[in-house]
Image (cartoon, rainbow, N blue to C red; front, side, top):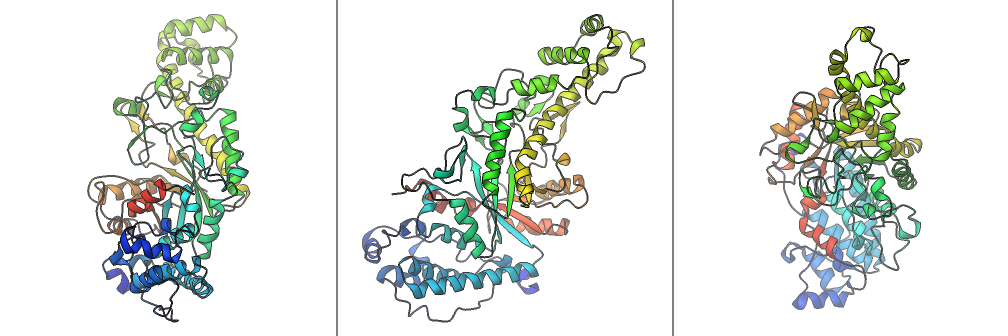
Length: 545
């Protein structure tokens, strides 16, 4: 492996297979019956000159395997455990033959994917990076014959031994329509495909190739479809200005890559219906026994400009009915509840408020709530003297209450996974827990340093400075704040071999992390769609028959 590490990364054979659908090449496809088995989808996106003679012969003339030969080459594996162009082309050819009904090709294909899985495991054992994962979104057209197999082959070809499949995102769930008892529509809704379980298929096909398949779930972001349901307004998170996440920031939100989107719909984590629906969804996912479950969007919305900072109680998403009620119930006596209510209504309390509650509740002595210890000197203070500390404590209570809802919601999701013995992880921003100014906080209130340390931590280290050092600083910040023994597995954005979106190539980012944090042995890449944008667009836009 030492020699391999010194080699430069070769970007060979890593583009998705496909053909131009014109002229004689289209005729060849028709002659081999590829349209009938759905291979136009699998083969979308490749440049003809990149197809080997072996695969070209198969595509144009049918199952002629003489050129492939009987020997499976044990070619030298590439840096970062990616496979050679020869390996990739041979495997694609066998897959095509298998889908055409060629038993010999099918047997060779199964043998080859098993051998590739063994080689990948050996390579990962010898590498400093024991686990290299990629994030993947599936589309309806991935229900076509051979599509899941081809995707999982691509992932292995690139040297990944783990894949994080999106099972809840964009207001859709990756559950078969016939078994979907959730409020969200299924990803595959085409008539005739009601029983197709793409998640179960991805898990099975991934494991056949030596991959661990995780289920990746959005959490507090329920998606635009959820907001259309009757009564949803009472479930959505609301701030002190009467806004939900759709009206906040002009009906837009900021996604995990800092891009403005309009599909984010955040719910109130204290709402019992939202919590139960999410728990039931997590149970349905856990029943399919993925190798892990990852929980994303464990936070509140990210605002723009001044709205990116929560500095007043009105900035907090605690004004939905369930959250307000839970906050008032944190009072330990009537005067404490009255003062909390006044603070929520105006954003501050006055000396007159303090005098009024003392008159209304003379037996209380002083207002109390969870986390506030009685002040032995309180009786000697005037309302003017008591007001500053009470107002500060009310602000701290409100922030703690907002975040406690996030933690409780995370527990609702991770419980089914942990009960089933499935590893669970949480996805977060390294800066999501930072303080801003005097007493302000990042509007996401993502206090990841208080996340359970028995979960995997997946910090989205997406800094953009054109170099790797700002990304490394994000990883180091998380490592410094993580309790001893916490499994930290950074998420990197980008692609191989070239800079994109002001981020250096993935291999540059990984080597920088290796040098600064050698204890890191697991990293994931967002996302396969970044590495193969043309193939992703094709898969997303195509339609099932």
